[in-house]
Length: 218
Image (cartoon, rainbow, N blue to C red; front, side, top):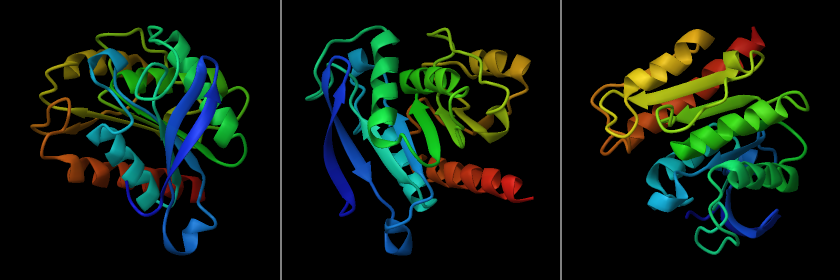
């Protein structure tokens, strides 16, 4: 955690969820561009909100001027409940959005299993409110039935994958993205956890967010 990080407890459908809120510094501390809600990897394989890729996502959004809210799914850390194969975890994420990001610009992001949940959340929410950014890193396309990204969100979606991902083959992500005409940003030589390449990952995410904003301004 950094000096701008706050610990939170959020009421979820299975009980209390623990969360961390990261805020930008300086002038944007009082007026962030919006709130990014970030989902972590698989709960049964050590995934938590403290995962290095999840932290990198949070830092990227904060660097881009957003507040970042990451949380532990049910049954992880001090969050109540038990693993629910993605169904309950989706409800957890929606509850976090409703509790802390109900108003103002919203971004959704996730890593691995968290990308699966974040994509499902985007599909659920898009008819109700605008999702400004959807960032999916190491999307678990070979392990879960990922929802298609709603057409309205595709221009603001950043899909990042490691070239030599040993957990989710790049080919599986390409097969999922191709019918949707979703570009995939491939980081050369990177594994699933982006070992040694987290600064590059953060740079790519910050650049992607900025590119989406530039597109909106034109």
